[in-house]
Length: 207
View 1: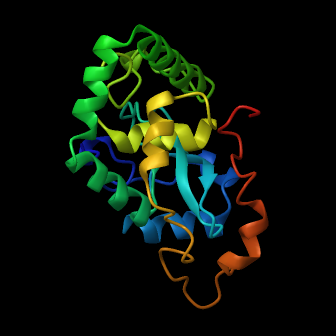
View 2: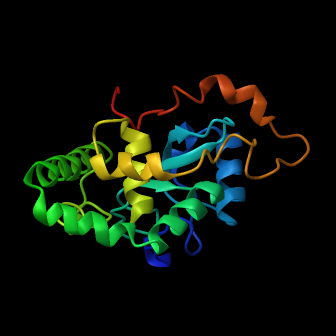
């Protein structure tokens, strides 16, 4: 399932967030190009593509306009999201949900991913309206592979088993360079490739 507009940090106008002061201006510009409009509530780059650009952002659990936002880790790279949408259309989510129902060990690991998601979101702030609600169908179903893939990228291998499976089924979306071309005068993406492997900013919680 493609992430819905109401669950998207780019949806609608927004006032600048104070938390953005901690996100590099060049990263915010890259994210805006990827999304096609100004992002909202971005608090960190949670993962970088092989090209050096952000491909997953961490988003505040409450957006600047006060809207609760449960999708903490949001995929921004058009190549990543497009390839993930293709996987969704293949019936993979249904297959994963069926496996969850019949495999107690997988179900337990997936519930652990749900708890990890909640823990990481709580580190960004408590929002009572979404307490206990993670994203992507966790802990019992698979409703959005974009969410699972973004969580797996942000948290690292071994945290979200179905997110890891999703990533393994995707093509190498960053090998051909940046998905969006920077404007003149902006920091070249190649200047930031060295940080691609370590870029979690504050989002990965020390992983």
